[in-house]
Length: 89
Image (cartoon, rainbow, N blue to C red; front, side, top):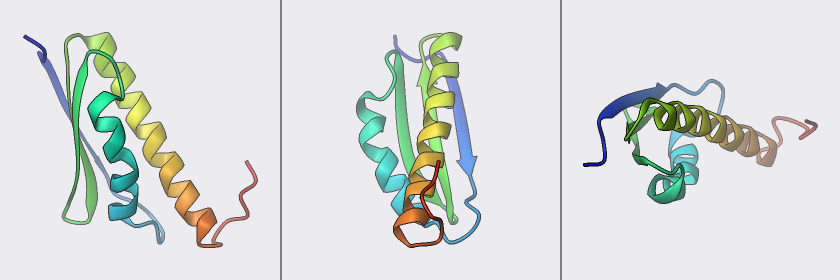
């Protein structure tokens, strides 16, 4: 029995970042992103939706933190590639 702790994160992007591009960047992580978790990434009503299930609370916390960081990074990378930001970190 894998998943006992579910969570759904909905991310509404600001600016010109495309939810489809960011969700596409996160999709490969959904299969093997965080041990002890299952994840699904989709776009719902123009927002990124990440559904997580974890075997324990620690794994769920790690998954939420990881997916939020990955989404932020993907949005920043898209902004840099469009020339909207200079890329300095």
